[in-house]
Image (cartoon, rainbow, N blue to C red; front, side, top):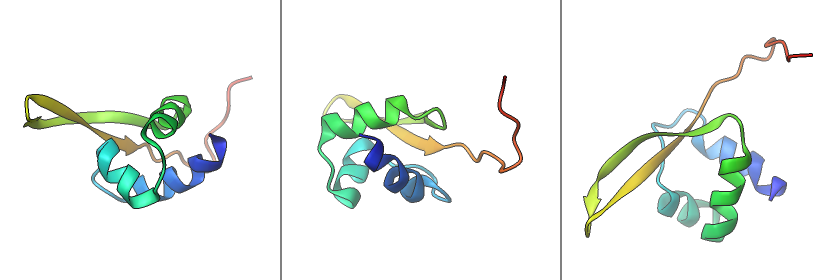
Length: 74
């Protein structure tokens, strides 16, 4: 799972966000593995929802820009 974190972060950085399906197609990662990976990443989040396609909304995932000098809690 952690092996995918870097690829996911690189794809989302500088973008306006992607749905799970778009990320799956871009990275070639299984849906369940992808969702589990993104849920475990503290800097990846659902930014908004796209209008329903066949009755289902699609979550648009983004990544937060964390500054390199950001202090970590002790």
